[in-house]
Image (cartoon, rainbow, N blue to C red):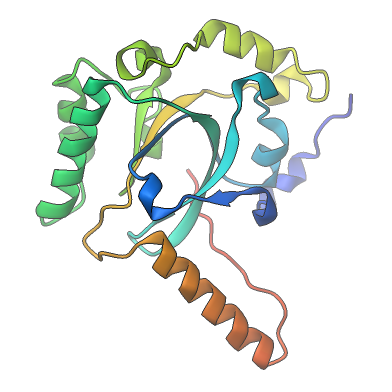
Length: 209
């Protein structure tokens, strides 16, 4: 077992490992980790029996950029569907972004909370404490057992694999009316322009907290 070089916190994720969510997959709910850099990508491991995947999601404020997640897709409960509809309505119809007090109040109305993961709140990314999982899905996931399986991974030192798993509701509803398909086209077009001028590297900004 080798200790993961912490200097990789300054390196971008390997984009080839991530699948871009298609527009018809939204809203999407996952249980897992936000991947901010290559260090996170290497240290956060979810055993294969949980069928996790790596996802690329786009946020559109304060600027358009990809954000990355590793997690388990959840089958939504009726409560989760209702909450997602409320958040989608707020996203589309209020003049400014959803504030933390507004979001916390919205969750409280469904007997949910986000105090353990509120730092991840941003337009189109809505975190919920993993302790609320039984209220949001009929997927059979035992959180305690999941953590035990993660820490038992022989390829990553346990002290580096430690991280708080959150529930994330990912939404592509936004005031700019920009969808992932449109954003991907823009990235490809920009890449073609760079190639035309003899440049072979595209730099992606990754927002993390």
